[in-house]
Length: 207
Ligand SMILES: CC(C)(COP(=O)(O)OP(=O)(O)OC[C@H]1O[C@@H](n2cnc3c(N)ncnc32)[C@H](O)[C@@H]1OP(=O)(O)O)[C@@H](O)C(=O)NCCC(=O)NCCS
Image (cartoon, rainbow, N blue to C red; front, top):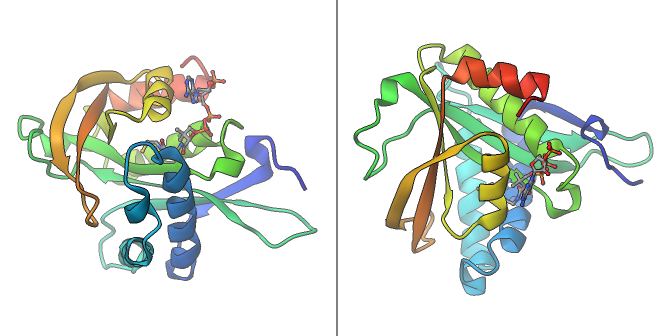
């Protein structure tokens, strides 16, 4: 069955049993999106897959106080089992070397957004972005001054997507040390001023 509109997918919070499927979706997305940006030996290493499973298991492990919003999008069909085709998470801005001038107590961050290559270009990324930011904004209303997103400086497609949604370039963090043994990379930082106002614009489809 072909899935071609955002309505073909269900968005819901991920739970611990979803960790393996979310890690796999994340991994399959970066293997294509970052093929020119990161070494194939790292993208395809079993240790990288293990790190992603550990990361998503940690994200989804229930905590007394939630530290982030973790969403997935999955197919829904009568004829085949549900498949996870996108993942996103968001929460208060995390600490980064080079972003110390930003007031983390008042800012949200979209930590990750990965749509599987088979589901890109259908409007799903836009829908999941909005749901993750909305949900994080409801959970941390004090973090309403700015939304921040970090992505690879060389991730042209990701950057065009964020620019399409109204993000403006705050700056580039040079040679930033990546987590999970991914080496160093220049990181582009995008910002949106006034989270509530932007949510209204995205909902209206005016950005
Ligand atoms: C970037 C990504 C999240 C976008 O999701 P998507 O489902 O492919 O994008 P959508 O179909 O929701 O597009 C939303 C809008 O952005 C625009 N857009 C998306 N990619 C674009 C690009 N490369 N250049 C220009 N515009 C783009 C679309 O035209 C669309 O505009 P519209 O709403 O006016 O029609 C997805 O392609 C992805 O996961 N890529 C790989 C990983 C990645 O780069 N993640 C983000 C940074 S870490």
